[in-house]
Length: 133
Image (cartoon, rainbow, N blue to C red):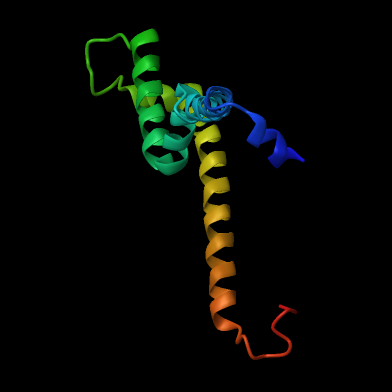
């Protein structure tokens, strides 16, 4: 039935229908491209791919910001360094606690993935008890 209807269309109507289908397809692909290349998606992929670099840069930026906000006064710079004042006031622990939590989570995920691949390589595919690890 649909084929008979298409045969009745003039070439101009068929071209207009094809153009409408192409526009719909283009709109769909354009929406996917906008979603994939959005700054949020790019940043998320970058953080997932280079997690350690982002953590290091955030830690350095945080320490530099704290140094700028709370400058250490005094005449002897060796006596009043940033780390000494941070350790005495507990700021160092406040900075490192979220970083340690994220590092622990990443290490556990990596260890789990490595252990699963290790087990899958060690278990023989011909072994009848391969499914029960």
